[in-house]
Length: 343
Image (cartoon, rainbow, N blue to C red; front, side, top):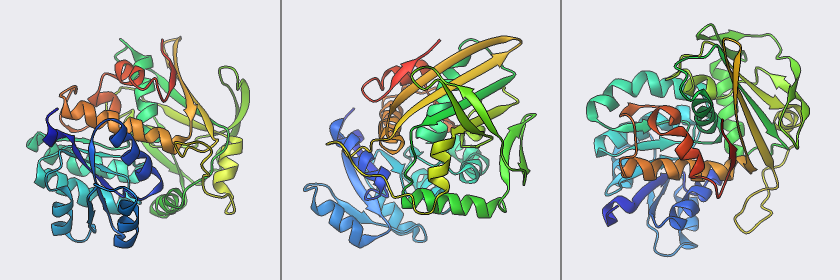
């Protein structure tokens, strides 16, 4: 990549995930441009990182977004709720002619991105990759890798074995926006479509690979995988599950935000993502494990940007991680951050 291709705008740079993304960009030799809505927080964040430019911008001011993206080769949107920020940032990226990546876990916001921007992005020859994060992106890559040479499957299951879940303020806000948009209903993907229901999700048993083993999980704890996986794979049933302990942490209003325990700023949280795809009595599995779901979203997003800028892609327009990239190769490239077992 030339020097011009090394400049990447990070919107929401001072947020919890944004900070990890900025650090990952710097580790890889990129030049992050710090952008965000709160000028005070942005200046404070930039002051501790001499040489990095801060560009305040708001989603209701297109000119400010254009200034924030000026000269950048790509943009990573880390600022939720994405129901508010995704569309204006994508529009700005299309005006700038640069790829867009976000870390949105909001199901509805990701649906909006596919529905609204597939045609404009494809016509412009621009890549737009939503949900390029722990939820939505990682699961999609694992399902895609597990599918291998299968052209379709009967069902895909994504079980999240989180040791705990200390949500950020952004996670709580995004969750509130999603619940409001779906009127408090639960969502699931059945028979090739999304279904909404007021039924309480069931508590089930899931047999994770060791060391977790058999654990209680909340069934139909639906995450962005129900958008990303069906966007490019023929799988009529996509189900996601969450460890009971982590679901309880998320539901409790007094669960504190993540606390750093190492020099990289990661929390003590560990995760194991267990993916099972089934087709006609056959079964394939893919597993990923690591530390801190927010921290690991940074290498996922930055690896995506690096591949977008070096032409290691499979399509243009709006596409999920599994559709845009070579899934097994992408996952193996993250060996410093993830342990992965593929079929």
